[in-house]
Length: 94
Image 1 (cartoon, rainbow, N blue to C red):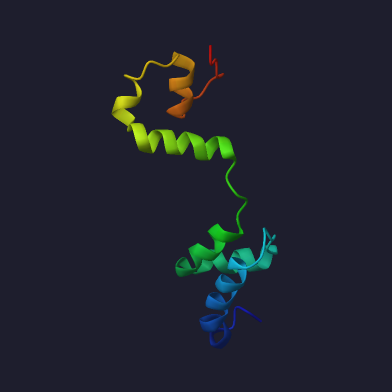
Image 2: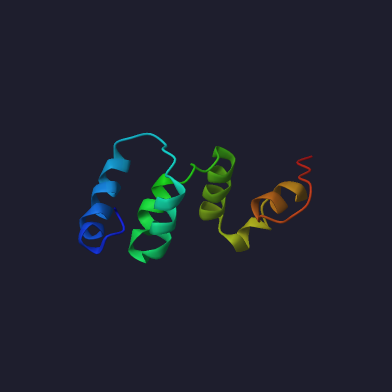
């Protein structure tokens, strides 16, 4: 029903507002397919996605504050620098 053109114009903004006021919800596969077909509904898809882990958010914040070029110059162990730069391999923080 939501994929009908007459309904989809106003359904997207309503779903967007509803997701602002609820915790994490799992959207059904048919609704996810419908969201994929509308690029302007990417915000809804992002809101319904699982939240990022705290470790990832910390990594992004350090990158943002230090900058990618200055990251290599910080007095940190090599394993930690590789972790902050999203390089593959085991993380050795010592």
